[in-house]
Image (cartoon, rainbow, N blue to C red; front, side, top):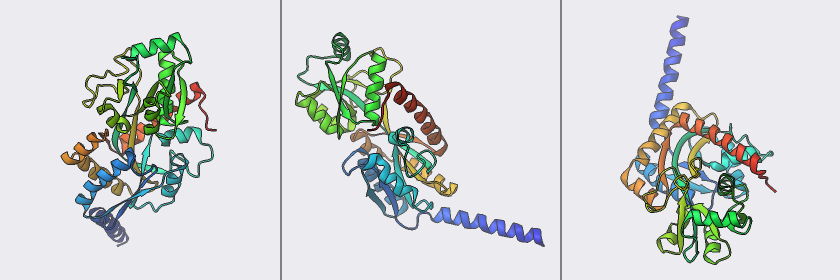
Length: 320
């Protein structure tokens, strides 16, 4: 009798869990975005959110909480109920904060359950179209001949782009002077204005300037050339085979979210990213679908933490 009761209770629990997963979501899902409206991450979640709304017949609420180097949004998400109805956009900054910020109100590597990698945002090295540098080799030769005389602009300090720039300097044996800006578009405008020699930023933030011929792309930071810039070589092609730098955007959930809910979210995101209209909108914005499930994303985060830690230590990058 006792065994029968236990089996009955177990089957009841399993049935309840399955029912919860089948009915999920049955109310609006909030996605917290640690970046301002109008940026790459905001564009991503609004496009993906449209697809999820169609799939779920439930609203997806976009909650922009910029500031604090993504810490404000992270702290909010970490305290949210672990029920799948609150998600957080996570990116390279998650692993950078885990290394550099010693007073985080949450454990960056443990506070969130990985749900799905969504997209990669390639970065581009570009100069003013009136610049004398026609190729990356020409720019690097000048930088090596006159150490410290050339400048590069990007977001910073201690951002993904800043660390990518420092990695680029170390790998190429150059000494560009770093100039920090509060946004990729502002950094690009500084190049357009002739205040800085080069910009290293997300393709999505300068695609309009490139299409208008205002900026000249010298290299992209991906392993392979981009369809959007087929004539632009990669940094690897230019002779630096170990260099790759992309911004990635993923979704995480508060730690302790039921695994079946995490898995359903992941599967629905995979299907949404595969929809032709969603993919077209993302690629048009310079965001390339790069789906990974929870286990692969967890492994990626650990690898990124190790990689960024090495660069930060070698370049002695600190937060003021």
